[in-house]
Image (cartoon, rainbow, N blue to C red):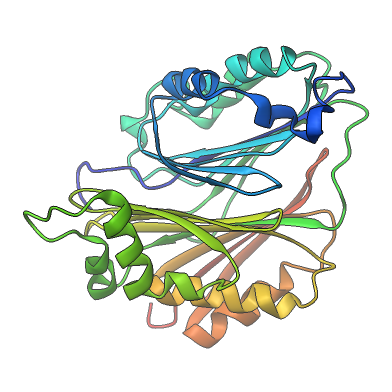
Length: 341
C-alpha cells in the first residue's frame, strides 16, 4: 500500500427539502432555480468545481473536479472524493434553499473507509468528528437521528451512515440506492483510465473515448452520459435516464486503485434483472479484488439480488450487515472478495 496518494473513497450527502412557497411551484423547478453562482459558492466551501454538466426535464447532473452533484426540485445529492470538505456544503445549501421557500426535512450522509484517513481535513478527520459536525449544523427539528458504523470481515471496508429527519418526512418505500466501492482494480483494465503522455485531448473528448473503450457506455445503453477524463489519469461519468441517475468515478493508480458505481431505481421497475445486469457490467469493467455494496431501501427486495450479480464473476460474499435508519429505511452492507483470496 502506498504511503500517500489520491483518496478515491467518496463522501456522499443527500439533502431533501420541503415547502409550499409559490417560488417552489414555479414550473416545479424548486432547487433547480438555484443560480450557478450559488452552486459555485457551495462547491467553493467543499473545495471542488464543475467540469461538465447535463440536464433533462427531471434534474441537473454535474461532473465535479472531485465526483458529482445532482440537483432535483426538492433533493440535492453531492458526492465528493479526495480531501474535499463535503459537510461544509450544508449551511450554504440550507441558506439558498430558504430563499426559495424550502426547508430541510432530511439528511443522509454515507461513506466507506478512507484509504488515507490521516490526510482528511476537518470535519472529516474521523466519523466521530463528522457526526459532531452534523449534529451541530443540522436544524433542531431534524430530531430523529442515528449514526452507525457497519462492519465487515474485510478490515479495509466498513460503511459509515448518519441520518436525520423531521417528524413528517417519509421516503417513497419503493426507491433504492445502490453504492458500490471497488478496490484493487485489475491493472490492465485500470490502465485504460490513463491519458497518453503529452496528450492534447480535452477532458470531454478523452472521457468519451474512455467511456467507449472500457465498456462503461454499455452498462445502461438507455442513459445519456456526461463524462470527463482527468490528466494524467482518472475518470468520472454521470448517466441520466428519465428521473434516475447513475455515476462512476475511477482512481486508477496502482497501490490505491479505486472505482465506484452508484445508481438509483424502484422495486416496481419492469425488471429487477436490469439492476443485476448493470451491476455485473460495472464490476466487469474493473475486475476488482474487493467489492462492497451498500443497498438503501425501505423494503428487502433488492439486496438479495446483489450476490446473484457478483457471484458469477468469481466474487464470494464474505460478510453482510443490516441496520434500520429513520427516514432512510434499511441499509444492507455486503462485502465480496475474489475467490482466489
